Image (tube, rainbow, N blue to C red; front, side, top):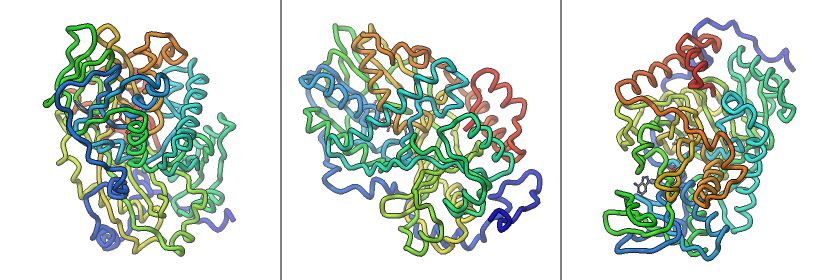
Length: 486
Ligand SMILES: Cc1cc2nc3c(=O)[nH]c(=O)nc-3n(C[C@H](O)[C@H](O)[C@H](O)COP(=O)(O)OP(=O)(O)OC[C@H]3O[C@@H](n4cnc5c(N)ncnc54)[C@H](O)[C@@H]3O)c2cc1C
């Protein structure tokens, strides 16, 4: 079998996506009818998108949660599990799950540390506990779907990491030698599993990841929260937190919630706490969704185990199959805009979608003729430790969690548990973790942030084009604990 796969001489300074570029006409035709719209939101049934009213007047609550993405919604749901009698109010600036939680890739990973390598580099002693807590968290997400009769299309398929360049094969071999829970596949086995001519080898982690329908996950969580008595207000942007009395008053443009405690799940948006304003930056990530594949098209790519796929470069692609057999293909370019703002106009990047379409047909040339129906983007909540940070403010009346850096589908539930632990004041295994207790460094203000982030991005791209070798900037960042290695 090995002998049937062509070995190519690789020109220095290129990647397979440049060496095996599809014709421009193939790319143009595939994008002709694509709508700038989030497939997952368009795919929601009407009963999951009720138009909730804005907050008016004064409400009283035990806990007020700001933000109705996964972090806020899990926090609200878990609060009702801990105390079924608790009065919980959620206040959301726009709609439930409209932001990252409704537009992501749907890779629900066990990792709480943005991958094992990132965690091991920062909290080596805690990794056994973090790995165990991460798996428990993933199991709890899967169990919650069944327990509450939610349908967010969870499929525990695991994750498949293919090497598309020779130097990445060595990385996979090292990984497989260190981790007995992963399955190493050589070139023939990798291509027999998922039929891409770009694959040189792969590792399959079978148990640590599930695929979900992201917008369904957010809206189903909201539905269950409401069934359990949580009040959710939409179109109610919180403008201030008043802690001059004994509790917390959350103030919106039209009303206020007076509560004993508040949990902030506002992620990449400007923090309501001054101390967190420099802790995250929005980095834009772009996504394409194809039309459903025909039976013949599906047969041509194999992929019968339906794993989530993430290749190994610094600038990596992630892709997965949906329930109705479309392929979501995203990642690679991650774009930071000077001024750290979240703006709808940053989402419109035809050049980036064209590059993604090109890389898609390099990966699956046999799908030539397949069309993309949707293209969209979202802001990744990047922190300097590439995973969430946590804390409390104002005499422990307010808790916060943010900075998931593109890996929050699973770990936001853990973050909800951490915030509730912190607000209760009881020490738990979670709150004793150094990962939870230690705040990462903030990003510098502009122009240093833009210069640093763009220089890092350029260096990562160079590294992908130079057999993975890291330049001086990347080595320095690695040494300072600020290096990113996907
Ligand atoms: C394109 C893309 C792909 C991704 N793919 C994956 C993936 O495959 N796997 C993975 O694990 N992670 C992925 N992520 C990351 C993941 O989606 C996020 O980490 C996660 O959704 C964060 O959830 P959240 O609730 O903290 O934030 P959000 O979903 O952003 O929710 C925050 C909410 O807070 C609200 N808010 C903010 N400020 C205020 C205010 N002042 N008043 C009231 N409300 C406010 C916002 O309106 C928003 O609804 C991806 C992200 C993007 C953008």
